[in-house]
Image 1 (tube, helix red, strand yellow):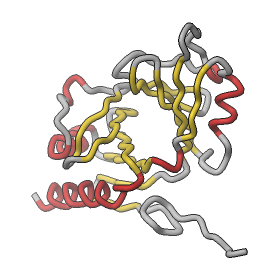
Image 2: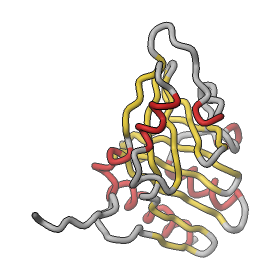
Image 3: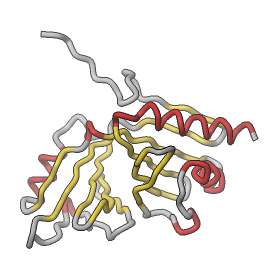
Length: 186
C-alpha cells in the first residue's frame, strides 16, 4: 500500500503563516467542520451545551463554535479536531438533525491584528463589501472576496476567520497576502 502523507489545503506538510508588521495571516487546517440542519418538525438542539446562534451570528463555548449558514442550518467548528470524526460526535448529540462532515471541503484562515482593530479593518475594507462598523465580535456572514464566496467570522475585535472552498485555497491566500503586502507598503 502507498504511504500517504496528509497535506494542508495549501498543499504543504505544515500550515502556512505569514506576518506583515502587526498583522498575521495563518492557515488553520486543524479546524473540524460539520454542518447541522434541522429536520422537519425537529427541535433546535443544544449540541455539547452550545446554543446555536441566530442569523448573522457566531457563538463559541465548550471547545467549539457555531455560526448560522441558512434557515435552520449551522456550521459547527471544533479546533484541533480535524483528524477526529467530529461529525459523528455531533450526530450522536443531535440525533434528530442532519449532520454532514465538512472538514475536507473547506479551507480556514485566521487574520490577527496585534495592534488593534483599525489595522484589521483596514485590510478587510480592501477585501470584502461588509459594513465593518456593524460587524463586531460574534458576527458571521457569507460574502464575496475577489469573486470567491466565503464565510467571514468576527471572533474578536482583532481576529477574523475566513472559510472558503478548499478548491480555491491558493486563490484566497493570494488575495489575503497581496492585500496585506499592499497595506504594509503604505
